[in-house]
Length: 542
Image (tube, rainbow, N blue to C red; front, side):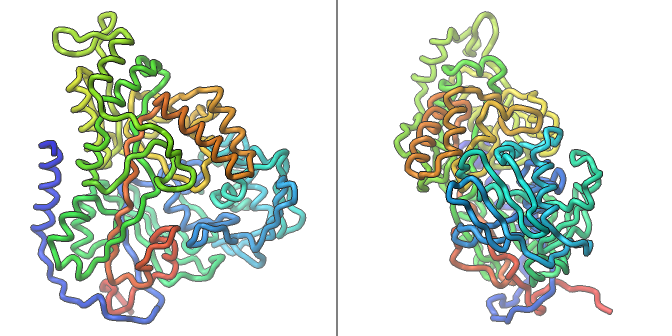
């Protein structure tokens, strides 16, 4: 293992071992469900705002998802069930969906929810003035209308395979509060009013977001009275807070999962661990609008110079899998026929020289008097930072001069990603359940705030993405997305690095967590979680 990683891991272990365990409570004592109490978790990045269609980042979506509902949602086995919709009917030609909405629902401010809110939200997400990366999904709806207060219809010119999935991811917004607002710049993004289990109570910038139960929740009141998300950018600091009992759950890193917990039995007395295939992947991406990354040989040369297995073992301690497509390993949509680019320094040098680069006196590749040098940007995420370090070491070994800059998340997105002012990044994307990748890879999705910020443009890929959205036969869709995956891998606009396992630590005082994690994930039933009074933190009472 590289010295840098070893020292970092050692500091984590030493830091954890310095903490004293003074808690002798038996958290395995059974207890019946009861309302009340506050759950505290931690997040490495702060939300941009709480209108998910504008924010476009996972931190914002995680909080907003507790406040807002969509028409549909996934059940624990990843099938669709109603959220704001009671039921839905798909026409025989698959060009029309009729949603029968739940009635007698109120927003958190006691105003009634109606079909007009759904129609308003659709108009906003498809408005060209709305700066959203998701608009293309809903622009395929040729017409939307309200038959009455509780019946919403969406019509398409052609069948759209991911239609139900899109209606499960669009948070419905209240028209009465936003109709006169600029959705790109509104108070509502920081003080939202929703319809889900929780409502925003307090947001202290840089510190925490506090939610309280929404008495008007569509699905009734959850058992937990409050949810507090603390903003703690450093995972080792989060871990110290977890074992001190100051937070109740967190996503832990591989060193904590594989080495700290097995060596400290007292932690296992009060904390349960959960492991599942994660919902995202990490990649090394290029700005294709900047030289030399417009040259496929350079991108491939860099890919051959990176030892992906080394990264998985060094950064994840083996708790992850190498991937060749943006789909979960082992699932139907993964293209298993792609031949991986293996670590091969000789092949890397060959490709660099094919593109006219030669080693100079300082053993750095150079062409036309200009050295092959660039900067890797990433956000404050230890796994991504360590990944960038290993990439840097390997590239420097073959003669590519690489520097690393680590930026706080909001600045990273606003100053570099949205402006296109970067050369290379180590970042991640989510692994969606539907194979549609239009928002990320279609050449039309390169505007400010859209997801194709690397500038990828391939007419054949555009065609495949357009066809894949319309194809309803899964076997034919599979062929389309297999070809799409192969083209992306052959051209290496990004270098797929790994999909890590989701590793979650949850304090045993949190009851109702399913020990056998369902396909939808450990957090699927968090509305059923509860904290028995005897396990709650001390609270002031009258």
